[in-house]
Amino acid sequence: MTAVVVLALRDLWRRWRMMLALGLMVALAVLMVTLLDGYVRSIDVRFRSAQPRLVVQQDSTVGEFAGSRIPVATLDTLRSAGIDDAIAELHAVTGTSGTDAVLIAGVDPARYRELDPYHLLSGRHLRSGEAQRTALVGMALAERLGVSTGGTVRLRGRDFAVVGVFELGTYLDDAAVVPLADAQRLLGWNDDVSLYVVPADGPLAVGDVLPGGLAVAQRGDVALVDEWRPLLALLFASVRLLAVGAVAVLGVALWRLAWLHRLDVGLLRLLGFPRRAVVLFIGAQAVVLVAVAAGVGTLAAVLLAPGLARTTLAVTTGPVIDQQVLLRAALSAGFVFVVAVSVPMVALLRRGVGDLVQRGD
Image (cartoon, rainbow, N blue to C red; front, side, top):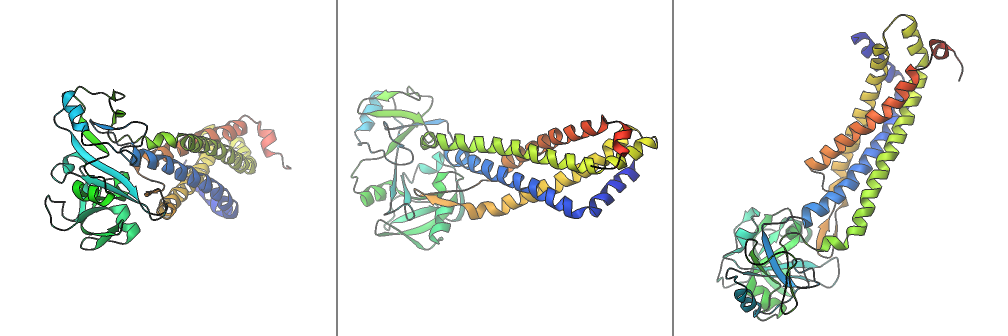
């Protein structure tokens, strides 16, 4: 059987021009499916990081991202509900346009690290009671603004000393994290905040409505994703249609490849070779074609993904090609291969030897 595989690979090399054309079609299909799946995955990674905590925010807003503003008197409402351990945060977007917008997160320097366990790439954490204005900058924002630890970032006309750069893996990688009091002064909010973080095992539950137009939501599951649901549905549909198209393209390609070898298959059967030798001959070529093309398409997606990132409304989005996306790509490629190769293989093996050795198309 080894000789059959060697013959199949030699034949591939002899028909390299046609193999190149077929491989490019498969590689392009894999590339597009992987990139689209990466876009869908990026939304889940950056905006769906639910934590075992709740947030109390203004109703009908994307409070944890931006848009919510509630008075400090909300603490009295929470205390009357039996909650004494509420942590205030301020989330807002500043800037003059979508391209220079910056997400600001005002936090309690003594408590914020237990809420968002980020990875500090350089510098140090925020400290309470510092004389100068300080900020932690997310990795994505640091790259966009070209700042690093020891530099300064300008927020609403005021300079903040960058004391560290962090990575969290969520939309906060595009944020400038500053002490809550500095954020309130910067925005002119007095004592108002955007939300309060409360325990999930307390008297409140997701969906509860409190006096003063307040709502309870899951922390980390940003409601902004719901606004993008039609776009996500379109991307999911596009991925499925591309997968169907890949099956069709690969099926036609492998059928043409198998049909070109009908004489070889017929001669092998005339010489007494078992059917598994025929399957091995055609299957070896199909496996090499699909494996190489899928690998090229996936590698191209990984290399192209960073250059496709775009900043919209203070957040940089682009395809996320992680292990989950690569695993789905591998499973999809395997399914596409099995379906596409089965049709021409069965059709060719069901033909009589006389049909196979007959010359003429």
